[in-house]
Image 1 (cartoon, rainbow, N blue to C red):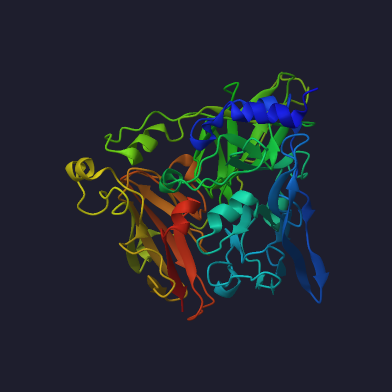
Image 2: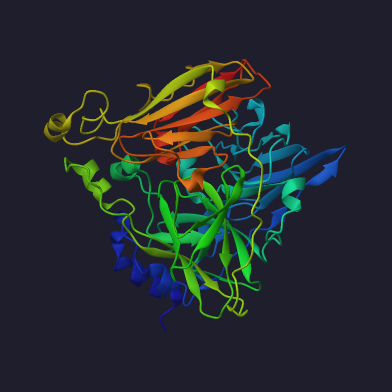
Amino acid sequence: MTSRRDALKSLLLGSMIVSAPNSLGALAAAASDSGQPLRIPPVLTGDWHNGVREFFLTLQAGTTRFYRDVDTPTWGINGSYLGPTLRMRDGDPVRLHVHNQLDEQSVLHWHGMDVPARADGGPNQQVLPGDTWSPAFQVRQPAASCWYHSHTMHLSGPQVYKGLAGMLIIDDDSSDQLDLPSDYGVDDIPVIIQDRIFDADGNMVYPERMEDHMVGVRGDTIVVNGTLNPIFRASTGRIRLRLLNAANARNFTLALSNGQRFWQIATDNGLMEAPVELTQLVLTPGERAEIIVDTRGTEAFKLINVPVPPSNVPHYGLFTELLMQMDRQAFDILTLQPSGESTTGSPPTLPQQLAHIDWIPREAATRTRRMLLQMGEGQGNGGGLGGGPRSRKEFGGWGGGVHKINGRKMDMNYIEATIIAGTTEIWEIANETPMIHPFHIHKVHFQILERNGEPPLPSERGLKDTVNVPAQGSVKVIAKFTGPGDPITTYMFHCHILEHEDHGMMGQFIIV
């Protein structure tokens, strides 16, 4: 009798295309039968002690059953893979105790949180094996879907890939009053989207090929909240999906398989002013969005990824070969089984006013900074300043050996910007490469002013901390850099393709 493990092996051995992770196979469907209920991460609300909400988080190794009877070695936070959903409120004094039970240093960054530099979590705040780090801060931001993940120097990519990430939800009084789905796990659903590679034994594989680190690691199997082929069975006529692109490098163009519309209600850092009706939504790594989906009826449908058209980048070597295939795969993400309610009548209603956003006028900025995202001048040469098509053709493409910002690879001893607390700045992020880079700024919640001289998309009209910077294009954002000042501890800004961050496309700023 053939065991499921043997069947999995033969499936995988017959499709060792995993060495070329840009092509998605049918492995997940075959190995997990007809689908599995979507895992809902447990909620951790913390314990009140002496007027402070305390959270206890343990980084640990374990095993996870992605495939039904195969134990896959993984890492997690308070569990074997991913972490609990942390839930806190605007105004809460918070302390998080991060204990490292792993065999290498790590740290957690509170992505999207406006926190003091010493509590931010990054390369300056590593937690050695056996140690505990206990950052403290007061939550001071509106309701939002944020997240937390490893931000270890040179190791963010493999550590997040193994499972060191989770969702962080902020609540506030204003959002509590809105008629929005808010029953966690019932009609308010976290959707943490990742792509992974599994070998013939069901082990998760983090590839080390040069090609994967040039464009970022992309897997051939989709997992949502750590679930293969997930199914969510709705019990209500509308649901709220808190979408998080937690992939290392893959961009997602999200849509519903039946073509129906949905309503976006939030960007990275909070509710939008009004719902935006959409049929597609692009999320680059690190970006979040909240959407409302009509789940009346009886016919199942899916949240899917829509392939993008092929790149028009001239073909000059390996790097551009990879670009020609990037994000061109169509695949299913999450099956939605409707509630069975009648579809007659109008779709579910939503508040027309969700939030008030204090838009920052351009004239409030006292300085404009330019951040140049650069690759190349490594393996294959080419790319970067002064590299035209002829030089790329002669020297082998855009290369991939160096990832840098403003001509500099990440240097712990170099501070790119010193910013006075309370001042407002415009950052122009210019992409000198032929691929998209998601650009993340720690601490601040910025507003997008323009992309290639045009206004931001309707789906981006809100508070953001990560922005899609188009190939050979630019984006301007504006933000107020609030205190407290800290002349010693730095914040980071970087490409959120984790392999690019690990290989140098990152810089530091301080607020004084």
